[in-house]
Length: 314
Image (cartoon, rainbow, N blue to C red; front, top):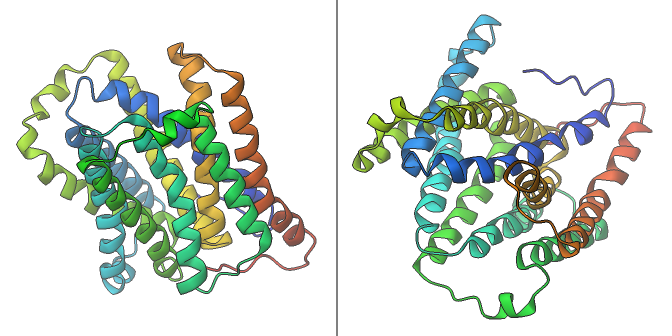
């Protein structure tokens, strides 16, 4: 998968909109998939097949680079452990102990923590637009997942599962930040492929106590179709584009797009699964979109007006 952005610097900002769209659709599909398959088994199957497809595509196009992989094996393994293995482990186990609202807060916190790390440790620039955009999106996501009820937010109880969610935030922030460093040398597609393969192997090992692999052959046609979506779009396309975004526009701006996941998850669930959309949902979505535009739009216009392609900051 190759996205030509050098000729049109603004293209990456448009293409990145597909990431929260594909990941937003993964909420409802995964919810149904894990009703037939244990969570870690489903995750191992999803990332394993995605990794094999990407590897086959790279080999066919001559993009598989063993010398580069050997030189950067430590960074690629770190990406696999943090973004594929640990994040899925933390999230899957946490959701057995905590509420969906608490789980959704991970989506809110990740862009904020990533931006702070990117600015303080990776040298990315801080601006009032970045801060205001993050705050606006943060409020929009809170309104969306609580449906505008202050009572829902103030009555939230935190438990063991929420501590695991903190681990999920740390692992995803680490994955995003490491991605900027690793992909200074490794192409986004190769980095995504190798880390996905390693991460899926770790997930497969972790899934053995679930004793759920025999259920794979008896999946319903709906679950099989949803697994195809998770593999092709929510994994291959979304992870490659997200890593490409980290490489070209930086970790903080790429992570801002994650805030668009809840609105996408809501309308997809409404269209495909009949869930209700309220005015509060629409208001929250408007705030989220406004925040993301505030962070990314002016950068896109600025780069488009430049005679040079945007620097690859990561």
